[in-house]
Length: 489
Image (cartoon, rainbow, N blue to C red):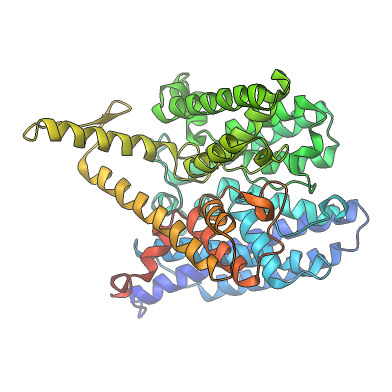
């Protein structure tokens, strides 16, 4: 008979799972070494060192967790949060050791930004950075896009940890479970993600990018992460408008639910367009693009095709929380600034690689408003709203209301905290919004599409890093850890 208590066995399972994640990251570190060797860069020694360190720490944690026999469902929240923090630390080390004069704060910020697919950067001079560093930034986007927890799902069923439950603590997907096992879900999502990256890379390459740029930008595009190899972001390619159109298309795909691609592959041909959030998302993109195109033509007297190209690209980039910029759209006029600020909060579809509030929450909030208006007129009526042909009960509407409140309260509190560092209103407010929504650029001359986050105080960078993690884990996963009730056994 085992003398281990359930609490002890759960702790061992956390060790074991984190250990496997770190070992997997060790393999990713080694790929960075191969890239550095291919481009004859001395940075391969750093990657080899971080590979060895990852394997050493990872297998040590696996050894500590050798007696693991399961974990309580409530501890999945802790495991999810620790997984993200652990991988963020792993992503920090190469940046800290490879980039000259990089502080740990800057390396941590960049790692968190990459893995949460926020895309904010504190580094300038990207055009001349070693290929190993640029590759590592793109890989961080790639890993974050598909989700660290999705990687873990592949091994969690074998560890008897309840993979699907863990996946739901990281993902807001409300769609039906198309595949019966969490390992199948992980494999299907991973395959769809990989095929999208390959298709995007080939399209970029055929469109005129060199092979390295094509691969790295494909990873950040499908991940809706926004890291580019150039200080001008995707504006480095604005003299090749077809690349902007290709990027717009693949960013749009990255903003769609990944599981619906699986459903289509399994014979449900209209699964994507039958989803109400997809239809509303496409409608919103089209409407915003049309308004900004017309505004640029009339207000800035711009060529119609050029206005359409840049409006479409930047609208999709912001609403999918990718964060690429083809040019400084804050110079388009006040209407453009206000519209981009609004769609910063929206996000794309649930179950996609994007961040933000998510389209389905906006739609359900609208249903809640309609229901309240209906009850004001007919207070005794029984009216059950429907979404996608399914009835929505009050508990789900209540959870949407609670999340929306916490979401905007978090942005407000973070903006207030940033003002402690004497940041101006625009920088503090849009910096908080872009961090929690995982968008990338904010507004204003400092952190806008033409700037970066390098000049912010270190304290502000740590606050924004916390905001990015909260946003990626949809706030409640981390917030529940601060509840005293959570720690009572």
